[in-house]
Amino acid sequence: MSKIFLTDTTLRDGSHTVSHQFTLEDAAQIAGGLEAAGIDIIEIGHGDGLIGSTINYGFGRHDDFSLISAAASQLTKSKLAVLLLPGIGTVEALKMAQKAGAKAVRIATHVTEADMGEEHVKAAKDMGLFVVGFLMMAHMTDAERLTEEALKFESYGADVVYATDSGGAMLPEDVFEKISSLKKNLKIPVGHHAHNNLGLAVSNSLTAIEAGATYIDGCLSGLGAGAGNTPTESLIAVLNKMGYEHNGDLYKAIDASEKILIPSLNNKGLKVNSQLDAMILGYAGVYSSFLLHARRAGQRFGVDVRDILMEAGRRKAVGGQEDWLIEIAVELANQKSK
Ligand SMILES: C[C@H](O)CC(=O)C(=O)O
Ligand SMILES: [Mn+2]
Image (tube, rainbow, N blue to C red; front, side):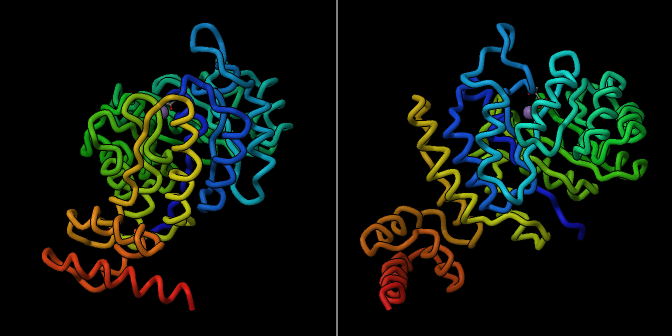
């Protein structure tokens, strides 16, 4: 099984969700949380990419370069990326983004218009950036045409090419056919960016991996335009369960969501209730109705609900054994105090 590289776009696709109002503090803190969670590539900027802050797309609270600098100040390992839509973003803007700390760029074109990105890909490669060709609205053409367009990006020098499901409109069979065709015909790695509009983001991401994609996008708590992107935390949990190699850290990704992103969203008036501990039920294989019992036991004995559920999973607890959760919490609290 090939290693999977994680791109998190909370600070770019997620920016649509907050009408591009992330603060510099959000940028720094979320980027720091994502780096701690082992994310390989962190995308940042206006939701519509570099220089997207316009009357047409909506003005951002900060310009892209300030956001990039704020995030870059927190990073030593993760690559900071920007999105560039030719016709909106320019090579000049990309140079400024690089100065501010960007190390990678995703050149985004409509799925049948890769040639719009030729100049930008070549310029970005000359600048020494890691370059991704990002073919948007991939559901709107067939596998053959998508592959022709992807081959163009490869010929311009892109390091990776994506089939981007901008409308969240692709069914698993469509993802499989398109990614398989890219994988078969390209020499460079293939990626997938899913939207959850049909509730298929995680399963389409897995289908893409099954078909050979090794670069997969997510957002913390599944933030992102429309119904959001693949939740980064769920992706990591599922990859762990399936035994894929990757650099992500599940607990740290959950922490970045719960301790950094969600409070910031709530402060902006977007009422988000975190249910990420519920994901651990599926991760550990624990009866779903145990969640509230585990939360209460965690609070009562001052231990992490995730650790209680993980241990309940290890002990193969089943319905009727709710009392085990208290027992486990007491044991964990005792271990902690030693
Ligand atoms: C400009 C879009 O938001 C890029 C993207 O994430 C997509 O097409 O999906
Ligand atoms: Mn998107």
